[in-house]
Length: 262
Image 1 (cartoon, rainbow, N blue to C red):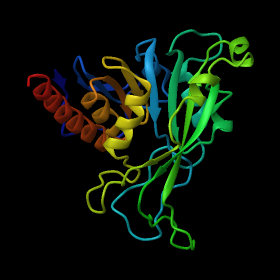
Image 2 (image 1 turned 90 degrees about the horizontal axis):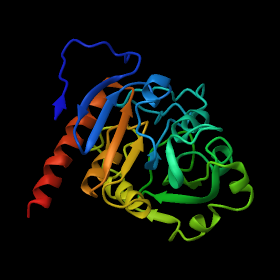
Image 3 (image 1 turned 135 degrees about the vertical axis):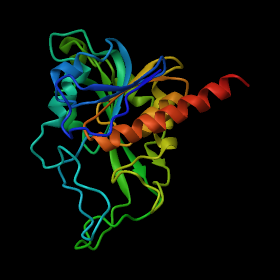
Image 4 (image 1 turned 90 degrees about the vertical axis):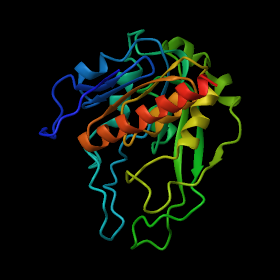
């Protein structure tokens, strides 16, 4: 296992990113997921893309917050286009393996289907079992987040013939009820509960497969993947969050090793 620890660091990742943690279970890169030199590092033929990219809403609860604005959350980034590079652009067979799944938070299927070459989609809902503060000027507090499920079909002719639609129809209930991390315990403004991410990962992969998250945040996807017996490849642009991800994933690896030794 390799872990890079530094005290005097810049807050802008270098070209190609910097590997902060790498084992046979997990890779964590401090880097920009829009950087082609980072994208080329993900192994080809991986099993699942599961990510929560910035939505372009400039997270703001209307009151003072311990969380800073998320990089790329100003609406200027074409995140569906960025994620298209991660699954493999038109004309390429690299990236996500054919007919495998994607889960993308915050974006509707119609914004993702074309660039990510999805042959079948479904709209899921994460019910947070709580009302968030959100924009306090609104009379309605957010209590859920949308998730797009899709089946990646590389060939246009296959998508046009309906390939991937069966997999989308076979998904189970579309409302996933998991409490969000409690107030005072969340480490990221959009932190996802590990149990929610484990549900998605377990539904679309088998043990040993690689789960990729190019917008790792505080690392919940990686923690869930490791605890579910999968491997993970994570990229995070914020240095503080990237280091937090390393800590959480390393802890999950120790727990997974203990469980395997029982």
